Amino acid sequence: MNGTTDIFGNGMKYLFDVAAIELRNMEALGQAQQKLVEGWSLLAQRQAEIAQGTLRRSFDQQVPKEPTVGFGPAALIDQIDGLKTAILESQANSNILTELAARSSGEAMTILQSRLLAALDEFKAALGQVALPSPTK
Amino acid sequence: MIARSVRRRAAALLLASACAAGGAQAAAPLGRFPVDPQQVSVSGISSGAFMANQLHVAHSADIMGAGIVAGGLYGCAVDKLSDQGVMGLASLATGPCMSAPGLLKPVDTYARLVSDLAAKGWIDPPSNVAQARVYLFTGKADAVVNPKTVELATSLYRALGVPAAQVTFRDQDLPGAGAGHSWVTKAFGNACSANASPYINRCDYDQAGDVLQTIYGTLRPPAASPGGRIVPFDQKEFVAGGATAANGLWDTGYLYVPKACEAGAAQPCRLAIVLHGCLQSAETLGGEFYTRIGVNEWADTNGIVVLYPQAHAVSVSDLPPTPLAPMNINPNGCWNWWGYSSDTQFLTKQGVQISAIWSMVQRLTGRGN
Image 1 (spheres, each protein chain N blue to C red):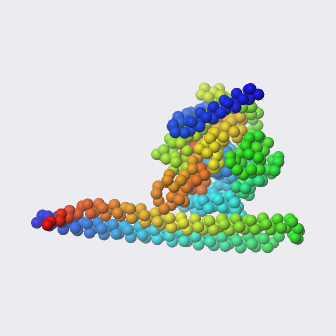
Image 2: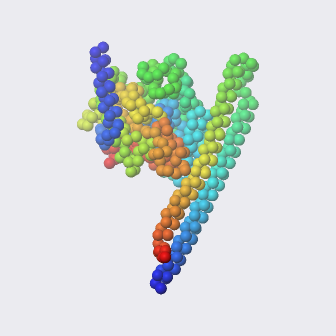
Image 3: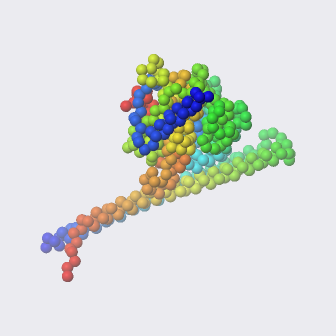
C-alpha cells in the first residue's frame, strides 16, 4: 500500500516538476522573442540611418565646393576616389547590418540554448526522483 | 665596430631571456618602482592608439597626456549605450572607424557619449581631459586606419576642451613619401610607406621623442642604446580569475626600467604606458616592439619607466561555447576597442583590459595592492 502511495506521490511531484519546467521554457521563449524584436528594431533603425546618410551625402555631392576642371585627369581621379569610397561605405553598411542581425539571433539562440540545457538537467533530476517499480516477470 | 657587435649580442641575449620569460614559465609578479603618480602618460599605435585614447579618457584625472598613432576617436565602435553598458560592433570598428570614415557621426556625438559615460560615473569627468597634452599622428600612406579618423580624434580632443596649444597633430610633414600604418622610427623597420608587419617603419623621424616631448615637455637627448633592463611580469593577477586568454590579454607583460628608476632612486620617475597594435604583441613579434621603437632610449636619459602591457589573440576555443562566441573573437591580438569577449564596458574604467592596465599602474606607483 505504501509503495502505491509513494508511486502516486512521486508521480504527482513529477507532473508538477514537468509543468514548472514547461513554464520556464515558455518564459525563455518569450525572452528570446523579445531579443529578436529588439534586434529587428535596431536593424530597422540602422537601415533608416544608412538611408538618411546616403541621401545626405548624395545631396552634398550635388553641390560642388569649387568649379570642376572638366574631363582632365584630376576630375577622373576624383571620380575614382569617390567610387572607392562608395564601395567601402556600402560594404561597411552591409557588414554592420549583417552583424546586427547575427548578434540579435545569436542572443536569442543563447537564451534558448541555455534554457534547453537547463531543462534537460531538470528533467533528469525529476526522473531520478520517480521511484518506478522494477519490471517483474 | 666591436663595440657595436657586443651591443647587438647583448641586446639579442636580453631579448632571448625576455622571450623565454614570456613563454611557458610564469613571469614574476609586477613590482613597485619609484614612480610619480602625477606623471603618467599613455601612448599606442593602431588598436593600441584606440586603447590609449580609451584609457586616457576613462582615467583622465590621473593621466597627464596621450600619444595616439594611427588610431583614436573614442567610442567610434559603439552602437548603443544602455544602463548595462555599451554595445560595440566589430563591423563599426573595421568600417566607419577604419576604412569608411564618411560613415562616422559628427564629433559632437562622440563628445556626448563621453559626457553620458561620465554622468554614469563610468569614466572620469571630461573636464580633466582639457588639462592633457596630446600627440596625434597619421601617415598619409596609411592604408589601414583612414587619416580622417585620426583627424576626427583630434577634433574630439578639441571639442572636449583641450586648447590648440596642447595638441600636436602630425600628418603630412614627414620626410619622404609619408608613413604607412606604423609606429615611425628614425632608422628601424620597413620602408616608410609600408603597411605591413611589423608595422614599425623607418622614416627618419623620431616619433618616440616627439610623443614624449609633447607630453612631458623638452627632454634630454636619447641614449645611444638603452642601459636599463627589461622586466617580464605576470599579467594574470590583474584579471579576475586569471582569465587573461578569454579577455585578450597575454600572460606576460614587459616593463622597461632605466637604471635611474630602480628602487632607491634619488627622484621619482615618470611612467609611460606604451601599447602595441594588432599583430605586434610579444606573442607575434617577440621583443621587437618593446625594444625597437625608440622609446626606451628616451626613457633612459629622462627617468621614465615604460610599461608595455601585452594583448593576446582570442579564438572561439578561449570563450564559453555559446552561439555568440564567434562574434567575440580577436584573431589578430588587438586591444579591445569594439567590445570583443562580451565586454560591455570595454571603453570605461570597468573594462577588463582598462581595469587590468590601471591595476598595473597602481602597483607600480604603490597605490594598489
